[in-house]
Image 1 (tube, one colour):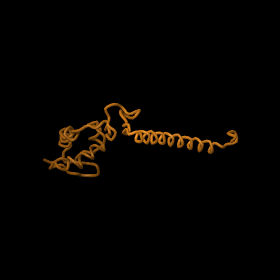
Image 2 (cartoon, rainbow, N blue to C red; image 1 turned 60 degrees about the horizontal axis):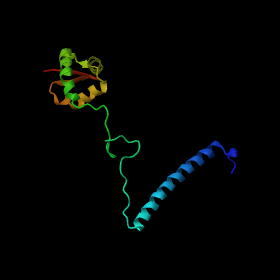
Image 3 (cartoon, rainbow, N blue to C red; image 1 turned 90 degrees about the vertical axis):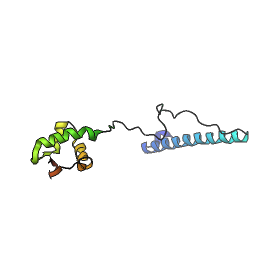
Image 4 (cartoon, helix red, strand yellow; image 1 turned 60 degrees about the vertical axis):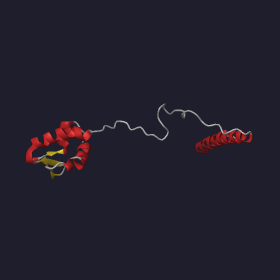
Amino acid sequence: MAFSNLSSAQVAQLIRLVKVKESLQAKLSRVETALESLEGGHSVPKKRGRKPGRPAGVKAGAKKIKGRKKGRGKRLKEPLLNLLKGAGSAGITVKELSSKLKVKPSNIFSWFYTTGKKIKGINKVGEAKYAYSS
């Protein structure tokens, strides 16, 4: 086979096939060692340790959630209610609330649809605009 006559697509396909062949050979060698240990009357050796590249202390099925803060609704409640009371019956927009509290607007919307709906006196007075009447 003349490698100089191969196109780039053929070379890429050749590389993929070699990788598949190597992985199959590795699997075959594991199966052969398992068969040899069973024929010899020994149990199949178990794998120990963690997979290469996996950090210590993280289980195989566990997912690590980064940046999740619990109790955000409780920390937003008092400042939001204070701003809503200060705005009066005219209300205040979510954009204004988010800029004053330095919180993403999506978090403010989420707060109104979850925690805010449980509080009597909070009313939607316009598009993305809320008011508090006690």
